[in-house]
Amino acid sequence: MGLEVRRPPMEAWYMDDSAEDQRKPHHRDPPEYVSLDKLAELGILHWVLDADSYENDPELQKIRKERGYNYEDFIEVCPEKLPNYETKIKIFFEEHIHTDEEIRYCLDGSGYFDVRDPEDRWIRIWVQKGDMIVLPAGCYHRFTLDENNYLKAMRLFIGEPIWTPYNRPQDEHPVRKDYIDHFLKAHKMDMSLAV
Ligand SMILES: CSCCC(=O)/C(O)=C/O
Ligand SMILES: [Fe+2]
Image (cartoon, rainbow, N blue to C red; front, side, top):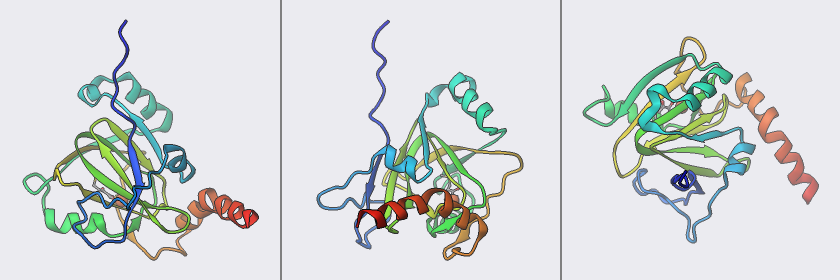
């Protein structure tokens, strides 16, 4: 059997502070990449799957069974396919949390999920065809298309979906407090010990 050829792992990097078009990469100079391990410390999960066989993919079925993702629908983010596109794209790019995981499987196109690190810096995660990503409940984030201007995703959920975004500040929201306790407190304690 030949060697399996998979594309490089999903990329993430620290963003610059420029106010340029949100769809540009916004790399720092020089670029500062963020590892998948670092994202895992923030509770962010990721898989690379075969998007062309999503309808009958045992790997996807296994993840869904193990994590209880029994709901699915599809979203195409582009002016022609997304109703109220201009409004929606603004809502997606407002920094927010959800009360549940945000689970997106990119079936085509690409886009950026931005998340905050423990020091409140933006990390930009570039999601492309085949990437499945889970942002934990209570994690501040936002979404934008990149310069390709198109993304098709499967949205997954446990039970009846709740898409409500709670815009920042949500520091007193119980779900935000739980996220800090689970993922950020340990990091902050490590940092204070390191001084
Ligand atoms: C790529 S799906 C649209 C974005 C979205 O649903 C969301 O909640 C962004 O944070
Ligand atoms: Fe969101």
